Image (cartoon, rainbow, N blue to C red; front, top):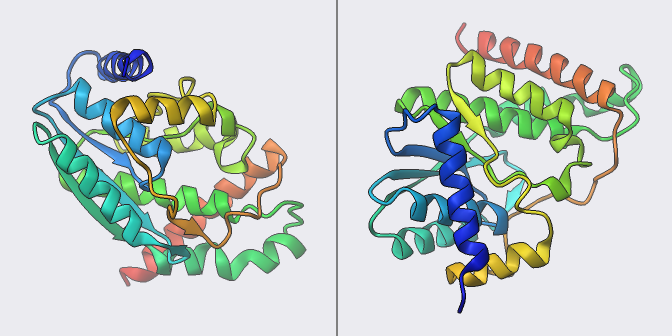
Amino acid sequence: MARNLADQAVGLLGDRVRAAVDGNFDGRAIVLFSGGRDSSLVAAAFCEAFSGGQLTLLLVDNGLLSRLDSTKRQAAVVKNMYPQVEVVFHCKRVSEMMRKVVMQNVEQDFLRRKYRSLLACVGCKLIMNVSASRYARESGINVLLDGYAERQKDYPEQTEAFMDSVKGVYASAGLTYISPLYDFLASKPKVNQTLDEFGFRIPKQEPVCMLADSFSTADPTEVARYIAEKLEQIREFDADLHC
């Protein structure tokens, strides 16, 4: 099979990672990994762009996910396909932070704070990135990648307001964070064709969050305000945890 799209993805990711770190890259990175199509594509492109490197497939478990075994199986597929790369799978559980910062505040977010959209996914993704940032610092790895896609830019947790806030989280920790194939992942058919060129077969039963079908558009100002409130609640959670 011709590899036009796969080779394009490898070239784009390699160029963008090198540019983001100004050429100072030690070959190690973390990718936020669900085992789904977008994160698997990013993982494959990294492994081919940086042979001899190290890639940590980081799953952040918020306590609301099902079918996590499929994520582990897909991580094993990546590891077996690319023996020339040190592929590591790690699951970081954040269910208690998710419960206290997001879920137990859902009602007051609607009633007292007067949010018109369910922004729990924004809180979840924020916790995911805060946790990934901490894991990166602990591991001494300075580059983090994700599978965010332009076709999903209207999702509250992928709006420009959200992305800017997340970039701030990583920048404050001195880390390099990029969505290396954001514009490349333009449509599901293109993603599927690229995965076929890589030789991937994604299982039908990908991990699913119980809030996954609650999507609605949200006002960017509400997203920004929600993020500010949740960052403060995360700080309070951390303070209580270390008392």
